[in-house]
Length: 462
Ligand SMILES: NC(=O)N[C@H]1NC(=O)NC1=O
Ligand SMILES: [Zn+2]
Image (tube, rainbow, N blue to C red; front, side, top):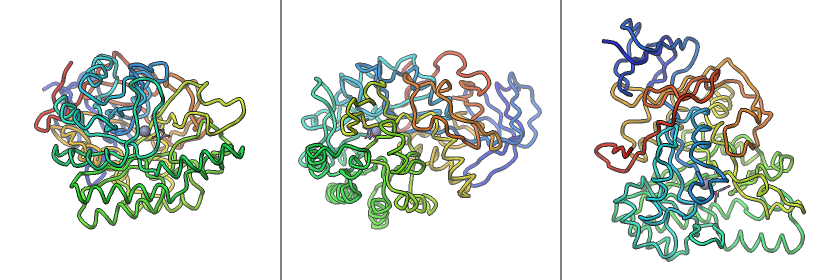
């Protein structure tokens, strides 16, 4: 038979081993994995010396379309994802307008996304005060899970997202437990962080260090513990987003060991940018929870290397440059969110695998296998026969410097500009289609397809 693509001679990262084998692809699927595939193919890729692995599944991305497309749109955001070695992502229910909190707003998202994605995509629904009765319709329309904020969020703009109160958190969990769905939680104690922020601003303490001090470690840990308790009595499955402290990881690990259905993610910036560097970089590196001190960062690294972190995600949360600027250098006034989704794979492969010796099979679980399993993306997350051919090539000997002009974001800003990375994503295939090549850039039309929560088959609505 004639294959569409054969990837030859790479170090292929399988579930539990790395093997030098060829991969044959047809109809978007992996058809054969063998040494020396000789059958003809329309496209033969020489992967010698490179790692061939499943593409990243970035389970935490904020595409701000519709409503705030000037912050980040599907075309620009997913170009960046493809260039960074991501082949699927899940879009957060906030930062677009309206926020994705009911059937109508989800339909607007689906409509806006249609035909504009270079990689495959799914959606989260939001849990906010007042939408308990909309959770089921969101499930029926195909959301992959739900997200809520325990810290303060949102603006006064109509239909923007809102953080939960404890009533909504508890009864939202009860409802989602009935629906069998996962609730993602941004865990920070809003009362304490808001009061500390107000106090800091009142006394004119508005530097990066002051901002970080207004969101201390214990405010993350406290929120994690409260959510775990609510989940233990409601039976809701939880996933904690962007965990920034070892103590929070430890609380979640204890709950897992006690039998709770709970997972957690962290993001490259918590491992690669310290609080001191935040002070030097300024607003571009502002996020919440804030970047932590070097000692905390070391502890977080040790948790990652011990296998206690389930997923790596970007929390790509972009905005226009003017929102990252304060004329009075007031760190509390600028947007909290880091543009980073183009440098998940290379940055963390460099830091975790090349510099710290994390086995590449474990790395692949963090970026692909675990998110696929957690969110039931059944055709994805692994290089295996019959899986989608969502495949990336990573050259471990190609170093490069991140330059502004190479970023595909709507606004090419990133705390990583100028950073040298000791490996490079050279090709990205989505269901067998080459969508990015390091020498050619983004290739062809946006071919990304929607992934819905139909658990038996992936339904494609395009
Ligand atoms: N609204 C929004 O994107 N918030 C994100 N930004 C960030 O730094 N943390 C978040 O949760
Ligand atoms: Zn986020």
